Image 1 (cartoon, helix red, strand yellow):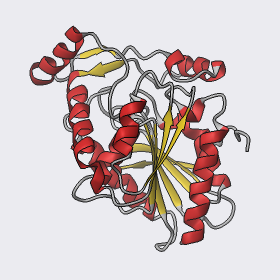
Image 2: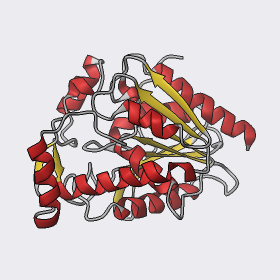
Image 3: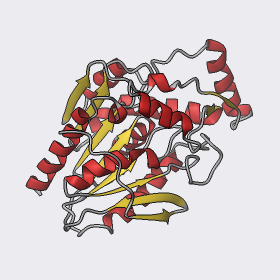
Image 4: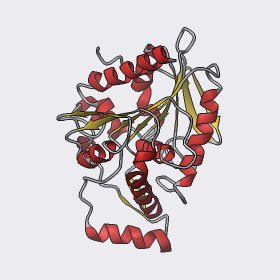
Length: 282
């Protein structure tokens, strides 16, 4: 399998005030995949992932998380992590209208989007899905953060929750692919800050997932960059092993964005295999 290249959305829309993109295959869809992107980026960076999904015969729907891309809200800010979960639920409800009621739904998240996905699945009211794919889940930082910035974020979360600091992400940490690095640098919908309240809410969500991962009741496929300098791959793998139906694929040498790496056809093949298996079992 080779990387298929980006696919333009069939339709763009607004769901619960959030910008969303929908990709529809030529034939009747076998199911629908809900894509949740990472922190400081937007759904427009997942057009190649959407193409993989459509080529497998599935509809894809992606959206700009609140405070990101074309969706409203201060960049990188959230009052409570629950807002992300409520937004995911709204997109999920719309996704169900895109295919027949009996068609399966699969969740796919990357990094912070994986954190949102896993937090939802480990919660008291998990979204109905047949399976989930989590790419480089943001369950712990491998990126070194100076101690003073950590304290400033924790204090700022209480006193000045919208306090923003540089997030220290480098395009070289995302992928080895120079073209993808250049595209990320030129992308004006991406940003380079992190707010105090978002940081503490993300930490709380990470702790929740770590403590409740065993509650996740559907099959999950974990696509982990073995050389990820941002999200700690060792912690992701450790938590994944506490999930009852987890399949773990660690890509040696891959950095954070496994779907944008030079050899991205390998994680794409995992996505395709899972969707074909879900189609066959439905």
